[in-house]
Image 1 (tube, rainbow, N blue to C red):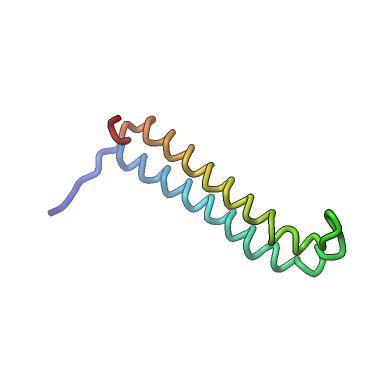
Image 2 (tube, rainbow, N blue to C red):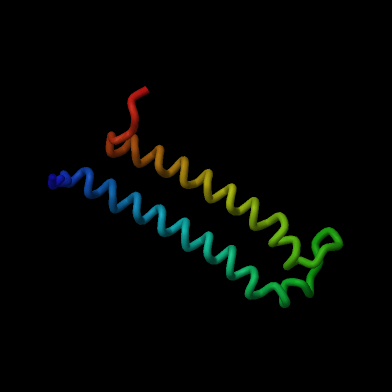
Length: 88
């Protein structure tokens, strides 16, 4: 069974992929970028903790929660815009 996508569904799919890969690249930067610069960040302190440690212990978790929130809001917006959301 083949499914043909309408232009509206194709646009929705492209916007969804763009949002997903954009947020995934930010996630990669936070995860691996902060680890790469941990030694340089540890020269500074925040609340008497080395900054590299603090970013991994608290900052990365907060940024992941923010990314999840952005994804939820963005997908809800796209669902409404392209009228593909679930009926309530």
